[in-house]
Length: 497
Image 1 (tube, one colour):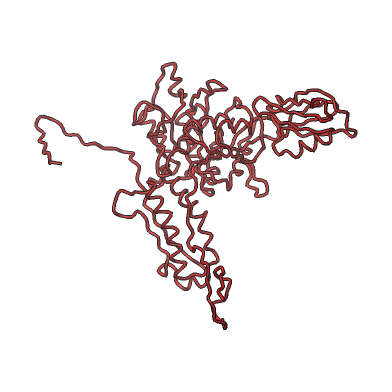
Image 2 (cartoon, helix red, strand yellow; image 1 turned 180 degrees about the vertical axis):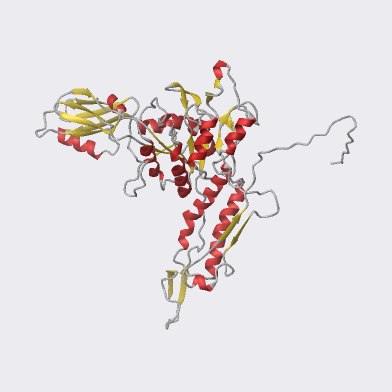
């Protein structure tokens, strides 16, 4: 008799009856798959959609169906999605924030009340129509909106129509019947009274980290975002909180100074607040002009431009000198259409970069186009002050965190040591092959130690396992020196080949 079983299901000692055992062994090594470096988390305002709830989107069309049309306002998420998408970004998690005074639109037809499922002015354009289907006893209730689309429900009475609407998780409305349901009658009503509420405070944008009901920025926890920003928030006193969140969550947070800021004020705020962190990128408050397809020319913070551009780059790359699309000018340079072209001097850029503040401007070292000029985060440590340090460090840490937990509960022995090393080395090897780490030399740019040399019995006996990982990043060419020697007296020797 032969016994086929999964490994661990049959005791390997103490057997009496001779027979063949076939043990099915599962792969013991964990294969680590790198996390996404393209997902952008956006916190801002909208005129429709759930509040304090991350919504997955891939483009502006998806935004419109989830949050309504774009609105004129510094914090409107729709404009931010449009700008980031223009750079090539296609993976978003959007969180709508309100001040709590927002109201849902309502309407009444034959005594039946219809209430928009979300607050905001978008609900004011919802129409609800009731009509009979031919000569049958069935009726059709239709809700329609120029941006959100249409939904239709059928039933023989108001109760069945209400049940149909309630069962639809994508319904635009909720139906409330009076104590005595009226007879069905043809009619149409347009909802009204919906409002977006008042101006949101900085604290409401940042939100609360209550695990039962996270709000604002903290709603992005566990969403797998690599980049994030609170659109239009310019309260730099909260920059430290934003940076701390970014480091704890592995999100490169992008902040901005107030519109029309001055260099002296930006530097003073940087010094007084003390938000220095490699988890935060602070953009100077030189806001950018953008020709929107709905709102025409708008002035917005540089956050969405920078976030969208970073999302299209490998984590080992810097935003420095990478061309940004869709910019029609800046507050300092003026609108491109007017021919204005005021630029930053080296002295001004030195002041900003020394304070850990980056800026989008034109021209840049690569030519006459718009791009991030420094590629710096707010860390003043030259080893950690680049975009690439933050993004690559977050990428490696999040990739390890996403898979290595599978080894918890395993016996600490030589097999486990080898499996741990193999998993981490596999990830780093894949990164090298993808060009995230240097693959041009003969020296391997990483090492992993997990054996008895760093795991003595005194530690393993009480359950501790340690893996020491060192990874050498590639530097970014920031200061390019070319030594030119020319003249009639210069002697040049040419070697064949």
